Image 1 (cartoon, rainbow, N blue to C red):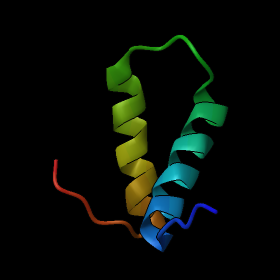
Image 2: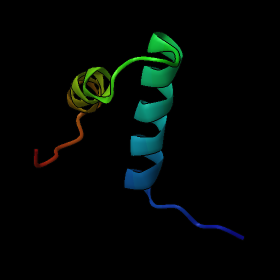
Image 3: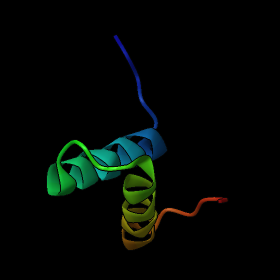
Image 4: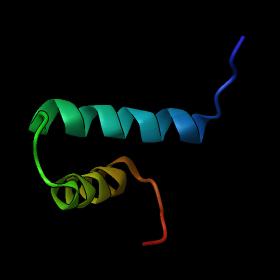
Length: 48
């Protein structure tokens, strides 16, 4: 049984939403920029 924290669940959810919206094949920097925005939209704080 795997137990995930709420933070991990939120981060994974953000990553999945970004990937579904953008699809494969872009540069990593594009995904990073969109993931930053998704974190902010979701209320997650992070250090960049």
